[in-house]
Image: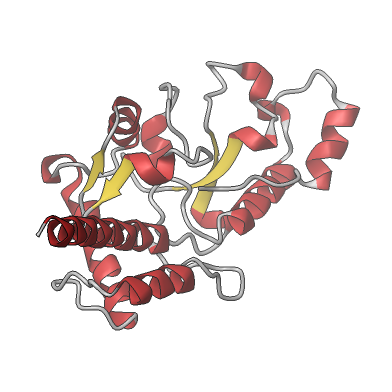
Length: 222
């Protein structure tokens, strides 16, 4: 989940001088300030797909609630994130469609289920709509190349953490340790797809906890 902070001072100053202005009137330098601030908040990951964004020239300012749907929020920094420029995906795929689930909502962490195969599953209707609108790869036929990329880089991150992606880790203490390590930025940046891998590890943790409860209940019954 992304936590939005204070808007850039350049944007605040411009809004004060242009009380009836809108996003389309913003000078390029202020748009760049917005991207720069958003990227730092996102630890240099795309707000939607979590792949690496190297700098402000490799992304665009993305309105979570499209300007055409609510022009009054076009200058609301809390409504703007940095999206990658991947074709037919994320912000470019979003366009002006309603987005019921966003990366600013805590539900995003529990209603999206990432799998070791590289696919993502929506556990609620709003999560399924988010995946469809942003083309985040619920089926290979929709976005095979990105699913493969997400799997490859997620596997690499797991191997880097000493975990074999093909063998589900069952050590609860180790899982919690890995989750904490992956959530910690280094020099202001998270590893590409770190939130995806954290989601996968939390899924393993839930399965392990559930199996432990079943085992304990079975033992008590005996």
